[in-house]
Length: 331
Length: 253
Image (cartoon, rainbow over all chains, first blue to last red; front, side, top):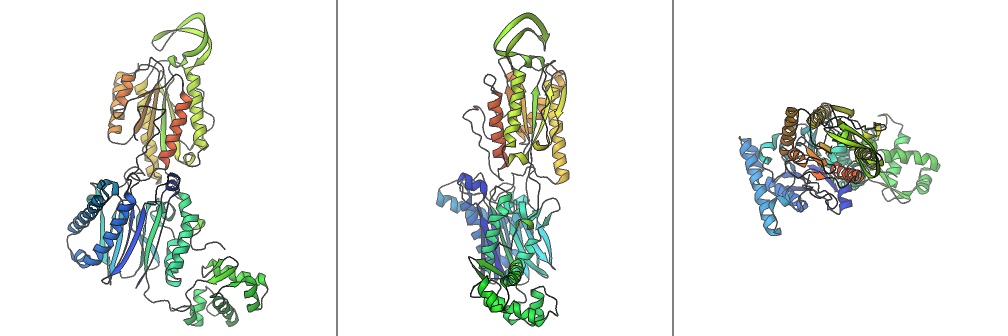
């Protein structure tokens, strides 16, 4: 089973100019196929946010219906042709609905579709597609910019077919895939070394330990506070992580597993581990520092050290005066 | 409690994409011409193909140009985005072409060298040097993995080119080809009534050159820095609409 989180925030430049967020993400799980898609609407195209939304929805639908046909095709060129021409048909329909030129709906496009042990991914334009394999982040598809940074290829460009990247393969030891737009690329992709930022691994890992809506909430906060500040562009990301050995929840772990999760020595003193148990269980319903200190029979300043450590691992969060456990306790 | 999933220290630090700008400035003898209230001394001088009356008072073109370029630097320094993206280089041409300020981030560029009018108008040599420097800078960006925008060439003259004709023809051909291939944005600017607008037009196949009103260098350079600011924030596929109110004849970049 694949866990999916997504995030798209309006860029500072677009906020100033009153232009909506043109980055769109979408996912679909249907017919045994899991698809994630991302599109970044062209800055010059007035209605590109509608185009980006339509192509991501269309590609999710299409891949969930035709995954096997695409994967089994020997000739990659014919798959590219089919994907581009069907995307154009979808945009053409939208242009008629909206009574606009098709170029007004231009966007980039990235997607990853997985069915059982097989995957297909494709990429038109800029942004990055990455994946994690054996604990290591790798790049599947690099950005397709022209010579200049503010030029790229769009779904409606003549070069869409020629520059489209299409990859298929076995999932094997791949643990997760990530799609990001060029706005996010500025902060989470080292352009010189062509490497993804390590924090993506951490985010993928948290998708398995924390409820997806909580990861999304934190991801959005991180995008607004950090990622968006490095660019004027919209920023978006969608990722899917395979839950091969489903996390059964903290409460159901053996002491050694708990110690590993909390980065404590495997033979951590039982009293120390029990203290963490008490905190994480106590914070399920929310507690203030003072309330928790009483439960632990510890001075607040020592209690705070435990809280700081757990917050650093992102297993708890603070809302107002109270602290809450966000780690999945019982799956 | 702060968000611990994605913090500023988790981000990679990519260099800011650059906009290389080369100012290719005429500093021939005629740029010493004075406008405004002045008094003739009765002496004359032959310079840049013409006889000139020597005067006292008034404001010379070159001093206004100097003030305009300084205003350009000030405007860029005051813009939080452009200050990190704009890289300026200055080529002057009189008897010969000289690079007086090589490409660098504007914060590292100190006081502007003083522009002194002298000699002929080797425009072709000046533009060729400017294009060579832009090409070299782009190569440096590519070698270091720095993204960049389409380079800008600002060509300012108050007269007719009188340098090597072959150099001029080569400069016009190179510039026009780059503009037609969307590899360069060129701003040809004529100063005063003697500027050869026909030659300037040949450098700019897609739009007419601009004739500067009076000696409004400062206004032009302020406008230029604002356009630069918009370019440095532009996103893929976005066409930069310039504010055309004060600068008629300019279209989209």
